[in-house]
Image (cartoon, rainbow, N blue to C red):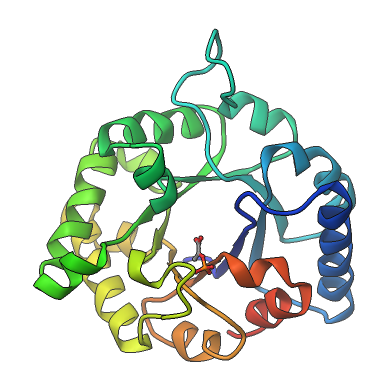
Length: 253
Ligand code: PEP
């Protein structure tokens, strides 16, 4: 059975003290409010990983992830962070192919294949992001566009490796804009992606793959979006920086 997952992407936000405060609040609420059956992943900037891990400790179902990793294992690549480093600092997940990485750092589907490989070789679960820009949505070619992102970056994986992937569908026009996809739009795309995965890896593998929605998710809309059959949780940006909002989203299943 596929997991329900809520992952928080802090992006390039929060100082050390702010990150500690946010994590402490989330961990306390998470424990006090007896949250069950949801996998929660905090994805802070790299420099926060170690101190955040110390606060999270062994809290059940509460995990750490990176926001990116290098496509190389080690070497003279100034400013990069490798998958083995993430693993050694307590991360078990890594976001790969966020639209901001694709757009501002020119990350291609081909490069993302190498990053996914690095993550998997080092025991990290990739949260693989896909999603269309507004002009593609308006042209009506969004399903083909997003399916192609999956085909080009993931369809070289073995069945065994594919089983470790989490997908996050994030329409670019909904990220950080306050304009969310409707729950029907999310369901339509998630179903199309699951069918696409089934055509390559079989129905059982597709049914076991968690597909998260991302794009201006908040405590007011999460319940409706998460109620859809093919939506298995969320990748949360802005609202993950507010402990109450983030925990309320986690409780929206
Ligand atoms: C994101 O960055 O992955 C995201 C979904 O951001 P927001 O929730 O702020 O739209």
